[in-house]
Image (cartoon, rainbow, N blue to C red; front, side):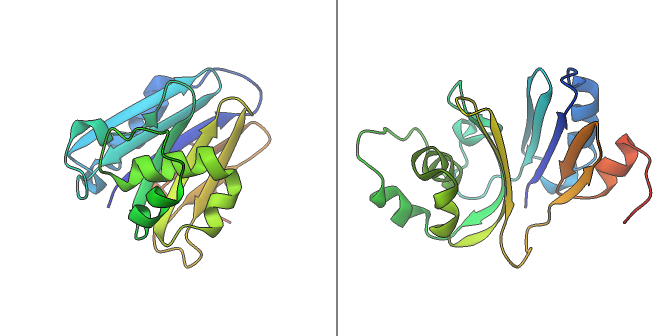
Length: 171
């Protein structure tokens, strides 16, 4: 179990690192082995990690190649098969399902969702297209809570970090 969090300010205002860190800190019990955040102006992604498949720090998140960014909670059961289906030019640096998911999203885009077998929730930022993809498994085994209004979209693996950041009524 890991925790993901994110803030997208739709008005273009910068995301406050303190807000994102508060969200991650509120989920630290989900992933006490490592945590991190990534902010690019009006988008911030955070993660707390429970190391299971790849114990190295190279698989810490947010996972990025310097352009695109992924925060991921869950397990991709068929990650070894997906890795075989991708072209051989990409040199993997970890043995994690995170990196395979990351590269799958880069290679197949949204089409990767049709290939993934697992339980997951994730946020993937594609820098070249300036898009944010939020997804979770179809059963919702790995939760993804979302608060949305005209100003911002905020999401997390638990509702508590959202409600502590922005007081609001539930719908």
